[in-house]
Length: 266
Length: 204
Image (cartoon, rainbow over all chains, first blue to last red; front, side, top):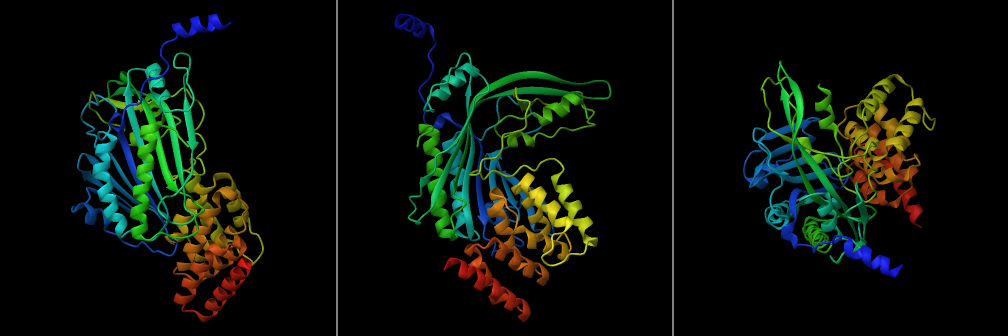
């Protein structure tokens, strides 16, 4: 039996690759979410313009300005602000020209470089942000790979178990590994939620005209995909001041970077 | 809309579809060719997995939920509510919260906080919000009740206090104190003080 296994092992392709450093990950989305205190009436806010120094390209307002969506170009991406009754979301997403062919999965560049744009901006906002009960840092990261099998081999470098890259498909792994916060705030726990998969994207070209309609596949892309949701525990009873929020945000980002670099660890 | 386009625009994966919502499918466009778009491809035939409790991603509302709740509020405007007596409106609302969880509370939050529905119906909803037994939506219901202590309507503020008493959670003490400080109606201020005393007795 042992000899048979040895023979089988020598025929099996390598099951995992070494994990690249943070520059191996491309950022598809970065997000900051503040769950505001119920004692705060957000009212009309001018945050986007104050932060960026320009008027947003698009503003959509519902409920007499209470609910708001603003977006506009920011450096190499698009900065989106959404204000809802219980939460404020800032997102940095790729700038996509709908008139141009997509040659690859749209991203904003490396995770590290994207953070260099996003973090100072958010830290500035947090200094004067409304009191909040909860804070979250989210990111969707991609690592382009040649095909699914290569993706599974690559993702093995990040997981505490081995995925069979040759005979598996539809892999999806979601786990939360909470930790105590190192911010000095007593009793604060941080959720470290990660979702791992190998995504398959297919480019399509659509033809819409009076004479013809159709959807034709153009090209396909594979990528290791990591979705991070690093957030303060929902059952934490106190509220955070602006100064605390900035410090917590740095901690959340550091925890996100740790997962991207070292994989799923307790 | 062409079925192929519909399929491409609703393709989902067990991860997030959000980034690709940017791609707008222009129906009626007469251009012979449109640039290539990306779509996520999956073998799954089921809906997305349930959102984990620790997630802070934006909630995806089940199809038709927003309209269903708005219509429920609108149709309840003619209903007569009695204190302490369950109404058809409150029964249906509780059902929706148990089925759709935070997504249902989020829709209610929009309607109540931005005063899109009449005060009487909003008050009835808040009175019963604290009585619903549904653990996953607890925190959001609590937030909405505490937020409603700041409503411009005294009926809504009063109902929010009743809802918080039903919830019986001392977390609301801080917000009741703030509400009492700002309350101009003396009768309501007394009601808020009673609610505060009741919650303070919960901690002892």
